[in-house]
Amino acid sequence: MLDAIFWIARTGAPWRDLPEELWNSVHRQFRRWMTSGLWDLLLAALAEGGGGEAMQMVDSAIVRAHHCAAGAKGD
Image (cartoon, rainbow, N blue to C red):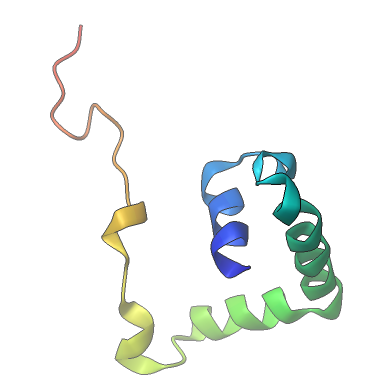
C-alpha cells in the first residue's frame, strides 16, 4: 500500500496507472488517511525530526538526478 502511494507521489502518475486490481483500493486508503489527518501527523513528525537517526535513512533507489546534474553530455 505504502509503496504504491509513494510511487504515485514520486512519479506524479495518475492513480489509474497502478495495476487495475490495486488502484481503487490504494486510492481509497490514501483518501481515508488524508481525511483522518494521518498524513499531517506523519509529516509533522518527520519535520520535527522524530525518530532520531532512524528517520535519516534515504533509499538511493528512488533518488534521481536530472541528466544535466549526472554528467550527461548535452548540447
